[in-house]
Length: 70
Image (cartoon, rainbow, N blue to C red; front, side, top):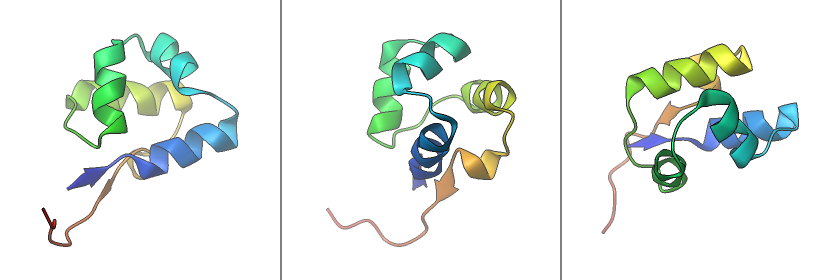
């Protein structure tokens, strides 16, 4: 499962809130909502986030390979 926890930490470190990120990157509020639920977003959005924040992909996402309990 992909997690965006590193992104939220990166935003705090850079003093940027989620709405500012959405405006900087240019994606919809729906995309931001999916990220908040650790759901899939297109790779082009992740790439754009890395470009805008001048960071690595590991600063945006992490992969949690532990089994998901439902």
